Every structure is written in structure tokens, then in C-alpha cells.
Length: 284
Figure 1 (cartoon, rainbow, N blue to C red):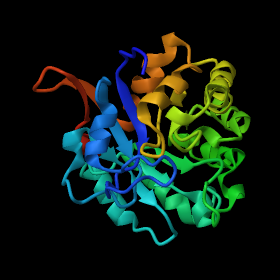
Figure 2 (figure 1 turned 90 degrees about the vertical axis):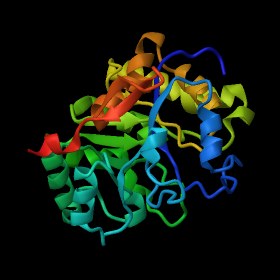
Figure 3 (figure 1 turned 90 degrees about the horizontal axis):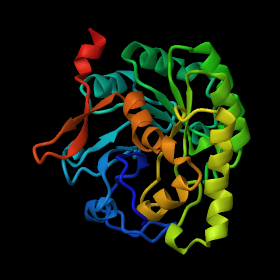
Figure 4 (figure 1 turned 60 degrees about the horizontal axis):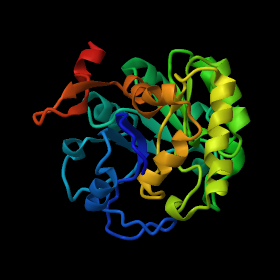
């Protein structure tokens, strides 16, 4: 990895940590492997969207890993989700609409939007190609999220994977709506170290560059990797080739901290880390 001194908040990792090779990349999904992945990086934190994160390591926040509440079906428990957010165990709500076979505007999701507005946390949607044969693509079409963004202007929405491969549609929705953001994880899956340079540029760097040009702002794009589905350091390298250097600070760290409610502080070792704002203060 080339020199990269910007603080990094990875807004999309997976933390089952089962010690098995990832299906796409072959990277071992373990805490030790993740620690190795962030070595030499100014890592300040990460957000996991694993519905069942590893229970073998206790509270992962001691490793600067935080979580969102994942909605995988229509039988979600709104009270459990609310408790997770208030107690500081979750910092966003992730809805996998393509896997559930419902549009984001479905009435059955509306209690989640009301809760997100009440507790001031963002809603994340898996957007674009679901990457799973049983999912239905039409429910993850980026255009479909415009309706809910308009109906809930006080809720922030994140289109995970930036609508890949429908980047133009995702950018239109984000540019039009002040409350919509794009997150760029897993734009390709697999070991990015082995990806030919020109292919990586076509599928990652060039679309990101177009998105930045279209949005005309560095405030709407958030870095996420999708680790362990990709090699973190090489993904950062490819990703930043599509982002103007003056935007790196926003895209690789500051936008996510602001959106998910973190602040930067010095740890006991003097290194900068991100810590959660005191949760209960948000709800008084």
C-alpha cells in the first residue's frame, strides 16, 4: 500500500470472525486477520453490518469496532432495536430490502424510520446488485429509495454499495436529497490484490470519480471496504484513485464520524480514536 496518512473509518466490515476463508477473497475471517489488515493504517474505527457478529470476543468496541441493527426479515423486533441503539450497542439500522423482497417504502418498514428519526440514527439500505441468487434486484434499485427519502426528510439514509452498478441512479438520488449518502464498499468482491489494474479502475476508481464530479461535493460519499470480502489495503489504494486528495479526509473518515455519531479523542496511548457520543444524551 502506498503512503496514506489520513485517518480511516471503515463504514462496512463483517465480524462473524469464524476463522474460515471468505468465499470471495479467501481472506481468513478472524479478529487476528482484521488486526493484521489495519496494521500500518491510521485506523480510528469501523462499523460492522453482521447480523450475528462474533460472540467470542465480547464487546468489539474495545477494538474500535461498532455495530448496526440489521433487519433481515419482516419479523424484526422494534423494541430490541430501540434498546440496542439507546444502550450504545448499535449506531444505525441496516435494512436488506433485496433479501426481504419488499420496497423501502413498504408500510412494514415505517416504524423503523420513525424510530430512526426519534433517536437520530441513520438508516442503511443494501442498494444495487444484492449478490445473492434468492434476492430480487428491483427492491434494491437506487431509484426506489428516493420515495422514502422524500417522505422522511429528517432521517439520514445511506445507500450501501453506492447502488453498484447503477451508480448514476444512486448519485441522482443523493444529489437530489440532502438526507441521502453513498457508501462505496465491495464494488468488486474478491482479493483486490490480484485484480488487474485496469479492471479495478473500470469498476471502482472511474465510477467513484464520476460520482464525485456529479455530486460536486465530498460530503456525500463514505468509504467502506466490505472486509473480508476484499483486501483492505489494496481496496483503499484503488478507492482513493477515484477521489481527489483534498476530499480524502471527508470520504475516508469525517463523513462517517458525523453521520454515525462519533467524535475523535486521544486514547490512552496518545493515538487518535473515534468514540461514541454519549448515547442517552441524544434522547433526553
